[in-house]
Length: 160
Image 1 (tube, rainbow, N blue to C red):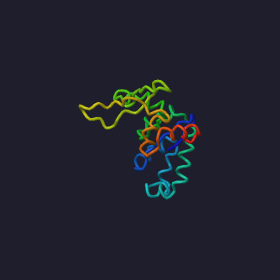
Image 2: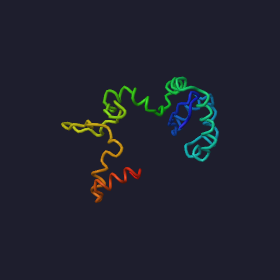
Image 3: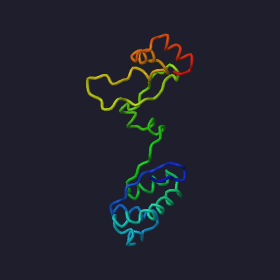
Image 4: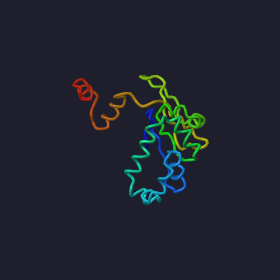
């Protein structure tokens, strides 16, 4: 992964010789694939620190939109690493309802991932967000043999 000038992260796939050649051309280093240290994928792996440094420096000098245009034009596979804002805005995630809204008594409406995989004929919507702090203490501790008086004492002492 490489960080762009505007702080975004991008993954890159250029392990084949042909794609690596295209990457080098778009980076302005068309001679690099002719260097024996970088001529083949095994050679690139053996010289990964130097290669990675060159690629990282190139990414760091460009913002994401400029990189997108350059890599798209060169047909070099890459993808932006998504943050939560990107996930929520992604057209495919939205179309598939990959993120749903749940009501939470403390936070109001909150985004949550939809159940995956979805099976036809089944309801896949969670009924609510997670439980409140201590919401199931009576059931849990009761199962351990703690009665309501002991539970109240533990709560008063700040143990639970």
